[in-house]
Length: 361
Image (cartoon, rainbow, N blue to C red; front, top):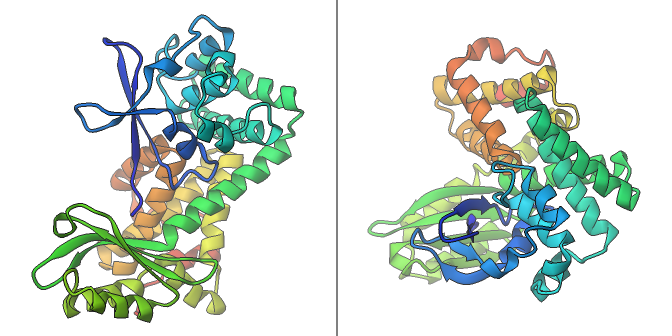
């Protein structure tokens, strides 16, 4: 089951900073990269800590430039700041975990293309969400220009990589479904995933009845998963097996694949809408994204459409993985706006697929 990796950066006894990194959703690999810097300890909050020894060389130019990007301008207090600093700092390079170096090799153009793409993605949302903050925008633009110039990176390369990143996130979120798996007398938190490459199914589950241990069933077919559930009688009974069979019908990517032969490729349209916003964040591309959410919301609120509820949650997770602040803005405007009016945006018949009622499979 996918989990948020929460890292606790302990800069000093008096100035602890907390942030989270979405490991599985980070197609650029930074969530995995930054996890290798944990000291293995756990704070009172239960969060993992980044080892203090990596906060070295604080008077260096790269520390100051990275720290200035977000929040307090003289302290490394965001994930992206730490990633940039740890990559470029010679002092950190000398003590960097081997696994981190393998994940993001030093002095490597591909690594720095990924860094440039991450900076660009953050810059794009800052320009849209906080356009008056010219100082912060300027710092991000300078960092992006520096990385691009150092490696002769073209903007088209960044656009291509980020579009691929968006597609990976959407694919991951829309090919699975999370639910409370209820048996007659037991229950588990569960995630059912269908692999888009080979069609295999994976059921991950955990909870009180598994001693909080994550258990998995990986099989080439859904029927094989159900059979294996029947073999694990301590974890499942027929009630739970039947529930998984029904939940499998609601995996958004599976439903949209069924609908595709008769209409629009909904998955491709979601990726297109998100990509258009990030490559050109303005009111028009944002409104198109808002209109997509409005169609889902109408089905969920007015029609009690169980599939739209699942698909909307997948879209929310996709946007949150890209930028939580953007998702917060969308949530606020959907909750306070005129849903019917927003549903008319954009005036594109392809978007009707997101207003279509689910009639079962």
